[in-house]
Amino acid sequence: MKGENKVSVKTNIIEKWVFAFLLGICLFSQASLAAKYKTECKYSVAGRWNISFCITKDPESTNPDFLYFLHGIFGNTRSWETDGASIREEWAKAGIQAPTVISLSAGPAWLLSYKNVQPLSGLLEVFINSLIPEVENYLGGLKGQRYLMGISMGGFNAIQLFSAKPEWFKKVALISPAIPSISPFSSPTTIWNYVRRTGARIQDVLTALAVGIIHFPSDYLWQQANPLQLVKKMNSNFPEIYVGAASSDCYGFQEGDIQFADIALNVGVHILKHSYSGQHGEIKSADVVQFLQAP
Image 1: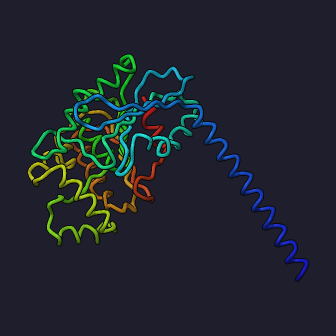
Image 2: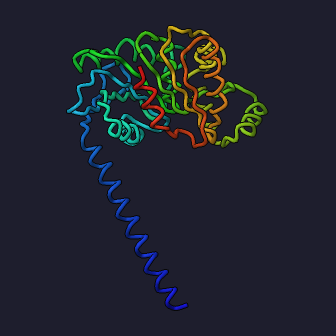
Image 3: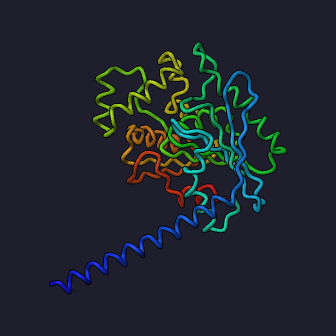
């Protein structure tokens, strides 16, 4: 028995050393890959808004395309460094030359909307008329295609942006997009039934609905921006869309995400719906890269 214990202890030690060695290789590989990219961040001159953007480039890449990235709630322009890590790994593994990634932000919690009575409204016009032209002018103009990617809140914002300017983007990737299947102005009973039906966390649902109310002060204004209403106006001339819907979404967005994808398909939009077992915001990087890269 004592001999067996000694062997067991030695085996455990070896396993730990092997794990530490492999982890070190993985971390070194990720650090090397991150160091390959150069990021420059600036504040926009767009009016009174506290808008910033970061531009991430691989100096060795000759890819002329722009990938606009919109972060999730409580994120910032630096969120691409972590959220996009697995995407960059897939690019490297596939030998794909990376596009220039442009991360846009107006703070930790913001929604793109046309101007209404709320002070926080009007960002959609600012992005279209001021911010994106400013960024592209800084980069010397657009010489390739525009792509768009949004996670959670950024997915909602991406929908607002390409709904207003569908001709701007070739493809759009939506990861756990913030598409509630209920209105922020729903009754407590409707909200509670939504929580029970989707398995969402009540505190996260209330946070999401509160952000909606802050930006859209009435159900009428909300419905004008509601992705489940906007998608009904789309057609085959809109960009191709990828929708990643995680089954264990703490906000319950998987219900609205699937509804959005199904409606888009019915109105003729070229769409790839990917429902998978996972958590909110989880990126299936290989699938996203394949979607973006396909002709």
